[in-house]
Image 1: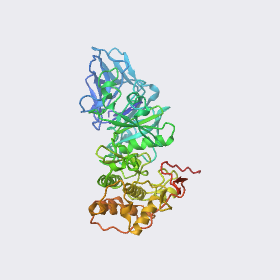
Image 2: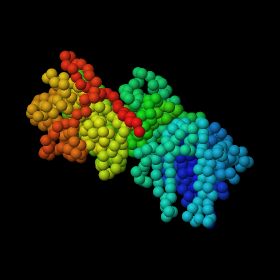
Image 3: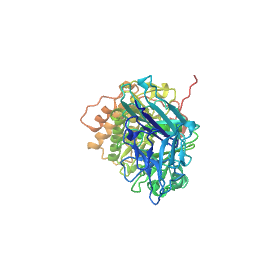
Length: 558
């Protein structure tokens, strides 16, 4: 019986292509090389390997491109430093040592895979269940700068005992000193074999991003946080043409280029923070697979040495906190816009908890992580500390508490226990902030030392909840608007109740907000976690403030 061959081609920077051991259309063997004019198509029909001639050139190159996408979108070139001259016929074959070799009819080599990176397992005739040959080749090309030295796309196929194959695509981290040794991403494994993977993410080259942001000039900054800095970037749309490699226009270091001159935001993660690397992995894995109108869209990413870059859609009105807590600008948010923002964030959070293919706990929902587009539509951003959870809704525990005081639920801040109800608590704080225009930190109110939650609770019990409304919001004090304000205050207080089991799920929260005829329960005492803050002064009043602007990590010894 003929030996079947499975070829797994690993591009060091960074493409993994695995051909299924089935028909000759997607396999290669010593007896069946790939000649010019022939192609190999991956079993899933996504990638195609073959010879091509780029525009404005007569030379031939062996490469991998997306199958069925016009114009030709090449994502990897084998012999970019050794073009095949016109009139020369070459083929890709497996030699006697198990290496892949690109050579012409005279035996002149244009490229070969390193022998040290080849693993060949011969078929075992005595064991029919293992009658296959697996060849794994690591392709190290110094001129190929698609992604970087740390993060790679892996596209794998594995066979069941019945001979059928299942497909998974996942993001895997590799040690740059040993590109063939995988490093597990804890908690980020694919949930099923039907994962769509990350092939829709654009991979940008560092030099292009640096040049287009004027080398990350301060004048291009949009904001800065604990994990990195965000820059305005308007030139990435033209990278595919303007920054093409020597192969010609359109064939370069980028695939899946943006179109229409679209503006984007570039998030440059701190290269000195280990949390920055964790955040990068989380955001690429999660945002690339979560698509919703109220979630920020990830357009691409880049890794170069210690630099880690995320490219998002550009939000013209920046983050909610830049408007909400600025007295000079808060008037731009009338009550209609504020209520729409509340509903939009609720829809996004409901999608994360219930309707997405992954069930996700954000863990750091706050005004600074809600971005506003040109029409003031809200989009939840910053999934660096998000966690995927099981469908049973059980609580999880962590020794590494990350988030922002003032938005963190008491059980999470104090005991490291988090669940969807942790996000519900954060949402409740956000709703009360949107209504009042005040941060949930120490504040002076009638000479009392209290947080926003305590202030809202006191007004609610006194029957004066409408007075919580931001003075910058023009309100007639009656009609549907007043009813929406009262409903938001009540929903916010229901979400910040001290006991997690008393807080509603986001499906109930959205229903209560969207349907004014729904009868809501009375809220119980809110949870507080503001006693550990620093002390500052505001006028003549001494305040106990939450550390609302920091991200907290608790490290415990073993």
